[in-house]
Length: 97
Length: 521
Image (cartoon, rainbow over the protein chains, first blue to last red):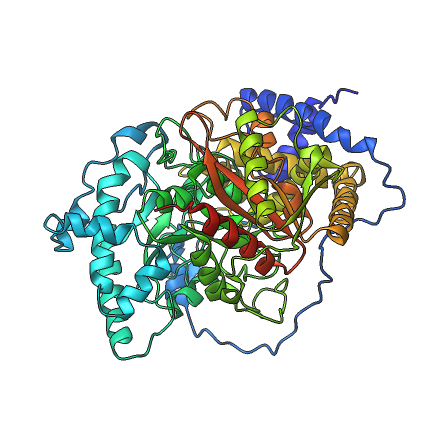
């Protein structure tokens, strides 16, 4: 069955994705996603009712270590990448009204 | 002025970017015209052969570096394999490494050999752009584990190679800095996403390179460029310092001129790393011992369900002919049905896009990279930064990933894909009960023409049909050149092994290479 993505859905996904899409981009995204979901729906041909979802092929365990700094203070190098810097901080627009 | 190749190159301006390139060479005081004949010979050596000659004192690391930089200067206007080249830095490294070799401090096979690194792998203080506008000014504060291992082995890092933006693409055309061209025919793409790394090796602009492979991004471009590319078993090479795309699928791997180099580079970069929680501790990290021309009794399975209508006839013939070579050497070659072939791509795009949407959340214009110029408030800054900073294919995958992870669709799409992944892995497990390796094409066609792929994303995704399932199952896969089509474009054979069976792949590939004499030079 052909998938139909509503304007509300594509707007909601845009919010989740933190992307600002123009009217044209929204329409394109809708068409792209509908086409892709139709294709992905071929997975429904498979009976997976008895299959556990597999996120990793190997068993993955948490890796614990002592909380010890090994790489020294890299404040200057780190802040050198800041698009906007204020003193020793990353500067961002006001976040609390 | 020092003008790194490709840096801040606008998309629309690809063909006119070469102005100013030679500046870095004049700054570096290289004389490169007098040694032309000798340079030709130097460039045709493999990485291991060059390493031997450097160790024997026949060639210096500086000479090799100069020859490679001269080749870069000559070939880059045609190939555009690099995003940045650091000529002065490379020569400085060469001098230091030469000293260490002469003092006996560096004795490994790759000491003094110039290499290139895909631009999604971090090197401290050097631009690491992922071929994206959003990271076009990013300089990491740390070096990737795999690169550190190469540096410890005496590698000379020439520069960072072009790629599809954030490794999302199959042609290297989604790069913000413009496409890379296939050295075998510049009217064609090199494949992707590690297209720059593969083209650079094929054009002899480096002796080997590192790429990354999430759904075929080492093997498919290696096939298109006629070089050897290996995606190791998941967890074999640390992902620390690799900018994440699909974390459960990503692996760094070698791209080389021949199989011996592949084994040498893998030996250098493979490690168990505490800094990567998905790193796997293996019993053996020495892959050089696998280089024996012997496949007697090796059980080789060819998936008959890979040889369907989508597969180009010339490619199919070349792969069958290559299988026959192994058969003549004593391998037992059979056809079988792998099953589930058509479900690999839809499952892959759900999983990879979901992980990408999560991984790429960090690019928000706060701590590094591009930030939009005009915005109102924090959220608007995030949105504008990301909308202006990401290209179309990246946005497409972030949108799809956000959708399949959203409540109401999570079970139907994301968990369904993870269940399919379990089935695909089980199908491979079953195959490896009967076979030591699976032999297949690396891609259904040879390299497409430039400009013909991005218009139909779904069609482009299908070019990964033989490679994505290997990532889903976490298996090792190797692509090796086996011939050319009538246009002269390379064809690659893919060898797939069970988990941790890289040595079996290398041995089969080495046998094929020895018998046929096919190597990139």
